[in-house]
Image (cartoon, rainbow, N blue to C red; front, side):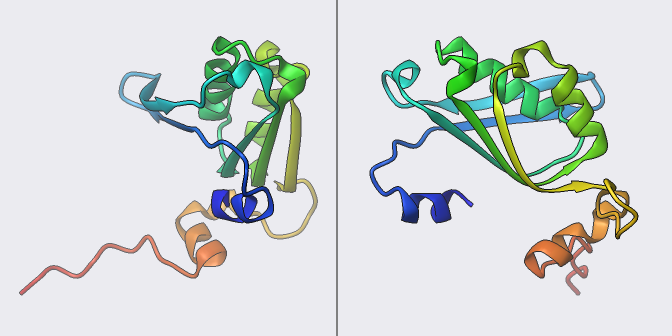
Length: 137
C-alpha cells in the first residue's frame, strides 16, 4: 500500500513503525521506528492493510503523537478493520481527532466476515496462503 501512495505522492517523506502485540506478555513490542525530520510540521498518513484488535494501531498513533504531531494531522488508511479494532480505536483517547479511512468494517453488515476466517484472509487479499510449507525430504 505504501508503494501505491508513493506513486501518487512521490515527494512524500516516509517513515516506518514496526510494532506487534505479544500475547505471552500482553504487551506491544516496538522493534523499529524511523521517522522523517520535523514530522510534527507535516500531515502524516499511517498505512496498515488490516486492523484486527486495534492494539497495534493505537500504539502506532501513540508513537506518532510522541513526535509532536497533532491528532488532526494524522490520517490512518486501512483496507479492512474488524469491529473489535473499530471499537478499540473509537474508545482510545489518543485517537480523538485522528481521521480514519477504511474500505470495509468487517462484520458491519450480514455479508462475508473476513476476520473470523483469518487463516484464509491472506489468500483472499493477496492470493497467497498461510498454509505451512511441506517438509523437505
